[in-house]
Image 1: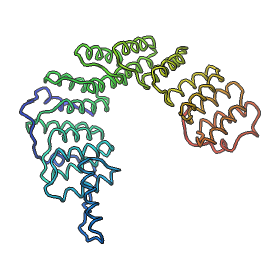
Image 2: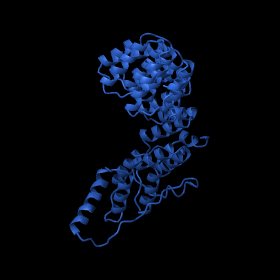
Image 3: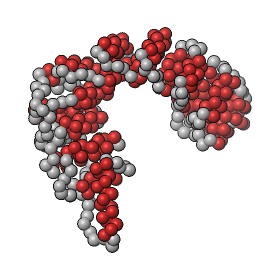
Image 4: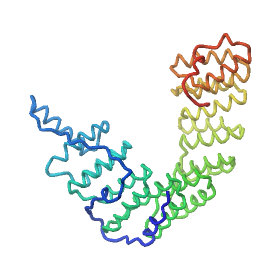
Length: 405
């Protein structure tokens, strides 16, 4: 997707006038021929009920849900919306904005746009908050160009974009891999007098790391610190992970120390990424890092344990791997198919097929479905050991699709 043309008006932004609402048929005049909105059924009825009290209670519940923006699911939200739009007076755009935000958090992006069309048809004017929601929905639906069209309307009608507006567009561009365009928006944002915040930087840093531009991400981290914007664990974790993938584990450990020195606490994702990097390069600090992690009251998750277990198994340290598996279970973390695949592969590689078969039985007892990889590893090992009659029924059908740990 090419964004050229959309950036041009950013260069000449007329960021002016106090925030005010406006009304225009936004979603009708964007030419969205390829967007298909779900139909909103106005199925609110006024039929008589055997219990007026029950109906009144139901109506009060629907109103309460709308104003608190708290819904069980999308059907619950739809029922509340259909009820509220036949009342007088109608809610304000602020209240509708909270409602749209709640639906957006359900990842019902098409539905948000459909609700917005209905709100506009009722003569309710948008404000910057609701328009930011629409921009975000378009970006999540991979229609960043429509997001920029909304941005154009914001400027045209004298509304003032805020940091959330720019962050949303930058994030949308990053999702599409349009790093250059995202950086241009970032520059326009700063030139327009807006102060980038942590989410702004994180979107670009994460995207730069994803596309192998780790040096640029480190440069942006330095700029972030210089401008007084304190990075968070997400910023550092993205770069640490990228450095580990580039096999620059020493640099990632240095950055890890730096983040702790400026009182930014690593989280479970930070530790797991670093442990993975250490394991991939055969470094023996991984278990030590796990102990430090636990010592700082950060609980390892299944991914953390699986990374370490897989590494121990590949090194032939099966006793240590089994001990770690027991510790994991004691801490309330249940083994998954990846855990068992690593352990079984380790036993099979060291001709301990009976141990691997015992693990398969344990796996089934714990209701963990074997994968194709599980079956492949066991069948291959059994054939090599001349134990074909021992091929278990779990393996004869190939198991469910899965991945190697």
